[in-house]
Every structure is written in C-alpha cells, then in structure tokens.
Image: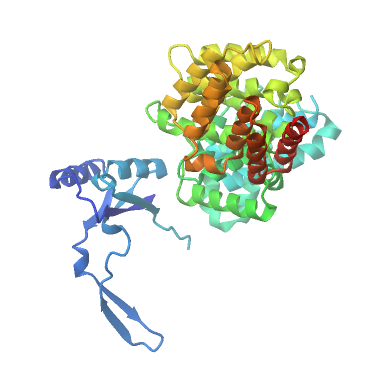
Length: 112
Length: 392
C-alpha cells in the first residue's frame, strides 16, 4: 500500500536537523526498499499558481505565500504494508521534529 | 447456557477471528451477523451445538463466500477465501482462537478520533448495535452512524492494521486502549447505567486475560473498586451506607491493586489504590487520609491535572482540616479548567459550610448548580443548598 508523506516545516522555527540527517533518512528508506519517489520543494517564493476559469481563460498568479504557520517543503511516497509502518517512517523523518509535521495520506486505489 | 449468553461471549471473538482472516471489518461484521441470525433460526430447533464457536465460525465463512460471489469488486479475494474454507479442519478444541486483542488495538488506534475509540470498542468487542452505542454516548443515532462509518472507512482505506503492537510500542499504544474502555465506564456512570459500567468491566477482564500488563490490572482494579459502591452511589461518599458496598468486588479489586503496584506504578493503579483505601475504611472520618494525600501526590506527578489537584485539596481538608483545604482550593481559583467545573464550586461550598461560613457556602452551591450539566447533579446540589439554608 502506498502512502504519501507530506512534510511540513514550521515557518517560524529554525530546524535543527542537518542535510546529513535528510540524506541518512533517504538512504534508510531506499535500503529498506520502501521509497517509491520523493522530492524536496524549492523555496515558497518561487511558487506560481494557475487556475482555468469556466470561459477557458487562464489566470497565473504569484504565490501562494505562507498564510499558515506550516509550509509544504517536500514529500515522499512509500510502499509499506499498513498505516503503522507508514507512521513509523513518518516518525523517523527529520521533518517531523522542531515544530514541523508529517501528514500521512494513503494513495487512493481504484478498482476498475 | 441459553442462546443470548452464547452470543454475548462469542460475538466479539468471532468478529475478531474473521477480521483477522479477511482483513475487512465490514465484511467480518456482516457475516458475523449472518451467522448469528442462522444460529437463532437453527439452534432453537436443533439445539445448541456442542461447539457453538466452531459452528458460528464455519457458518460465517460460508456466508462470506456467498457474499463475495455476489460482489464482483471482491471477486479477486474469493479464490483465497475459498481455499481457506475448504482447508478449514473442524477445530479440535471448543474455543476459537482468541484474537480480540488485535481488535482492541485497532478500535483504539491513535489515528482514529479519541471520541470514537470507545464507541468502536463497544460495537466491535461488546457486540453493541449502533443505536445502542448512540444511547451509551447520548448522541443521536444518525450522528453515531456517521461517526462509525467514517472510522471504519479510515480503518479500511488507510489500512489501519489488526495487530498487537510490539512490546516496545506498548507504552505508546496501550493507554489508548485503556482510555477507550474506561470511557465506556465513565459514560455509564454519568448516565447512571449500571449495564454499561458492567460491560466496561467485562471488556477489561477480557483485556486482562489476554494482556496482563500492570496498567490493565490497574484499570480493572479501579473499575471494580468504584463499582463496588454502586448501590450506595446516590449519596456522597461521606454519607453512603457502607453496608450496601459489594465486599466480594472490593476484595477482588484490592488483590488486583496489590499486583498493579508491585514493582512499579501507573496512573490507573494509583487511582485504584486511592479507591481501595476508601472501600476498606470503616467510615469516612477514619479513612487513611495521609495515605490518600500521598497517593494524590504520586498521581499528580504522573499525570498533572487541575482535577487531581482539586481532589488532593479535598483529601488535605480531611487530613489537616477544612481551612487548610480551602486555602488550597483558593490557590486553584484562577485555573481555567476549574472555573466552569461544578465539582470545584461544590467542594468549596462544602468546606465553607464546614467552617460555618454559610452565606458564602450557599453562594458557592448556587454557582455549582448553574454549572452542573445534568438533572441528577443539579438536584443533588439543590438538596445540599436547601440543607444549608434550613440551618441558617
């Protein structure tokens, strides 16, 4: 079963984890054979939003900017047997510390 | 053993076994009901089979195959299940394997809303119907229906597993299970429903048999030692007729407390010990108040809370006099959680009354009445108020 770990950083707090922590975490997921994909996102100031209206016209706007305390900083998709295993990986994620949070979302499965 | 008793004991057990096999709570619930329905039809005519559990399990498995045949979405699982049904030798013992512990941990999983954990436990392990669960938690049936559907959807779609946590995970996971069972008990008390409190005790006994951890022992002891006073509970502890207390239950609870507090202690065990001291006392005045104060200190260190501080102050009032207790209560006056908590006002009223400050006591009782949530609580406080006003 696949889960996406959405990694939110607290915008008002300096994280104490290092680049090495992240590298070690990624290596651990790869070694365990659970990592499907994952990326860090560039700074929020680089974000652009696109919306297409009913008339087909598109609107492009700068942002969004952080309106909440927490900002999505990256994600990992993992393939593990159940939620307990996913929560275990979320707890190991450096992003779950220092006021950050990891939201665990199951990837939808459709029976066609 | 009559048919109802068999079902009461077997339902949760059967459901747990089927959940474990199918990994699907909905399907397991449906076929558990199917099997019980079949039993209700056949057993009164043919008699209760020698091994009711095995009969129910076999029937439920056949019903599952029938249902899966009709349901194309589950077709893929059919082959697997069919093999299981064919392979299933008649169990050699009377009892089904007991897999209810897994179900306890699923129902009280931390990924589920706290207020739904007790409800799910009642439904899955005590065999309550949704309307019965709704009545237990004093919410409309439709509300409870939505909550249970939502919780079951999460169990299924987020794949919350049916497993007993490793020993290393237990300190994190067991409190949720204990809290779910205890919430059933406290709901039972708030609603004055003896049957609900007894159901919680029954669940704790099952849990204790399957997982004799210190705090499981402590929880069972706590509920027994409170429930032992059920027939006298219309009055305050100090006014209760102690001959109405259930001596056997007190003995059982007290023995469990000793076990729960040997070589360590947890919050349920300490609360149980406090209740054991009350239950063992000849009367209110001769209760071992110094020991109770000491236990509240231990409890407050384990799980600090304003409510514990309130109870500690009341115990100090008994040990050192009403003035000492009142001084402590007044120190707590600014605590937000206690401001609207009617037992705080009632405790103050009681101490003021004991100190002969009747006008202030009456005022505190009026505040308590205004804050009390239920009719019986208000009635009780009104009687206290009337008694004071009659004296002055």
